[in-house]
Image: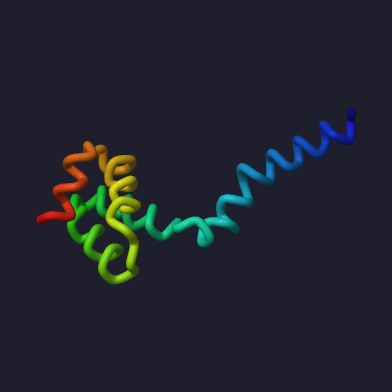
Length: 83
């Protein structure tokens, strides 16, 4: 029991502190950073164009970031790609 508790504590600490930073590049962290920057400057069209055209991300996957970080509705995020 003590071994499993020690493992859970060490694993939990590592999982919530070091792992996110080390694993970030594997999970499109640059897209999240671009979304936060777009929110800060208010330029979601530039965000969409940069990642959809230059990097080949599907519009539906970028709309998630617009909805989650930008507070847009589904239809608002769709209009960003039709402008």
